Image (cartoon, rainbow, N blue to C red):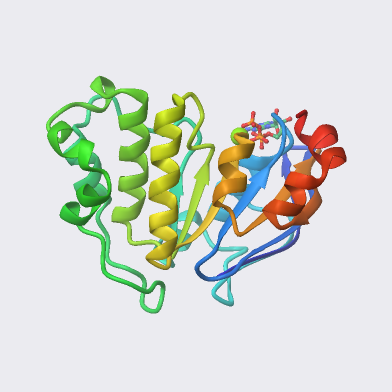
Length: 236
Ligand SMILES: Nc1ncnc2c1ncn2[C@@H]1O[C@H](COP(=O)(O)OP(=O)(O)OP(=O)(O)O)[C@@H](O)[C@H]1O
Ligand SMILES: [Mg+2]
């Protein structure tokens, strides 16, 4: 579904991603872990096109998107749940969802199309909040709305940047339940997380980043058992 090959990404002359390669196969949840400031969000921004790499290659379903602007990548089926949720305080929840609605890219995804009704079946608490403004929602409701909004674009690949950030444990569990349900509905997911237990319980494979490079990749159980990597790169 997604192939990232040896990308180098800069902010002006600051060399943040230093040869990052990663893959997401169709229908899997891949977790990307790492401490603050190691470049996780920069990798997400390179994939969606906000911070395009200067070197390397990014392909979606075999289509080279490295030089495409963000809206073209989105049209090809990349959905984004940004860090901090990106909810508009003065738009209603319903407006967030209806504004985002888009048909799937041809050949971009499997499974039934996302509609407002279907998004509400996966996040029932949003239904009675549809008329509320983004700024009136709780953190958990905002996160659900941010995910539902991304689903309304009918993506084949969903990028989530720290969806558990700032949420109480029960809500983190709820978000986890939704992500595994989405995988069961054949969505491919790249999940950036600092919540190690959540990432390990959900992911099919994990990558660990440090200082702009991938320093570990493996199965969740292998990382769980690897005290050295956990200690060195995740501070646990
Ligand atoms: N727009 C920007 N301009 C310049 N430097 C930036 C910009 N965005 C991020 N950086 C720097 O790039 C590095 C990587 O940042 P990034 O946001 O990708 O980290 P992260 O792993 O997502 O961290 P966090 O866990 O805190 O979200 C950091 O040193 C950060 O200060
Ligand atoms: Mg980040």
